[in-house]
Length: 398
Image (cartoon, rainbow, N blue to C red; front, side):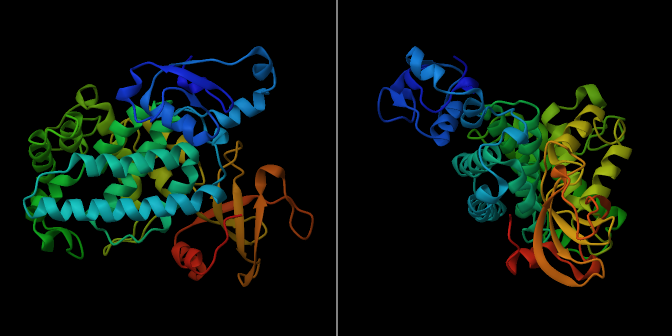
């Protein structure tokens, strides 16, 4: 059966490849947890299982859906809640950030790319996103954004994988996509540090120099045998545009690799939700509006819709004002994309209040009995709110 249909309680007797070519120690696997399902989904397309009729009847449809998760399941089918996954995702994000930072510094000093390290960092991203994508979207909002290439690359990888998951990509496809996204800006390691760290807008000459990172990234990755060849194409083409006005080659839509189109959207979202020296960050919802406004010209139209569907209309980590004036932060999406789960932190007078979680999809009401509804989204810093500061101070996820 396809690995997407596996569930706890099944006994795997044969893989779609020899057992000795897999990472499993024994021939035969009694599936006792969702982690074992994920491990099988990462390595195989289909497997052979042995179970009796009674055990099959004993597993309800609800259990099957909860236990078995394919790469393309929607967030409502996540194996664990954002509250459960957040801690593990944070550890993964921290380790991946250190790995990528070290990797990029080594490349800057002339070392070859260690494909194994890249894959290890990406595998961690894929695993946690398969369990709950919203936890990783949260982390792209609250992790320290010092405009460093490594941090940006990690955020783009996470966002692109979340997008790929919503498009029913297999775990192997998500790994390949993540590698491409993680290394899309590797060409910046060839640029002067002072250019990358410059405060303010670039001069025309500096802008041209910055644009050279696309070709530099391609050259670095073409010479790297330990990384999939498609990564070089993504590094070269992630600033191309469907209308042909991108760089460095002015490619039109049909000539731009799909993964490059996906990375371009995730990268733009991360950049415009990050404060720059010359402009304030947009709120996540404002960023989505900008992506939507530029669909078909700067970004692939269908993929923009896919991205918005993946991260949600109110992405986790968004600061929102309710109709009654209370202020909260979006925790996670629900099946109703207009009604996420919210952590309320300020009352209607914009004064600090006890943290309270409300699920808008359950039509939760305020003290006056009025159903909670989002009025608008706000940028980081509104009413003195910094999402990362609140998290560090003990913002509870649930």
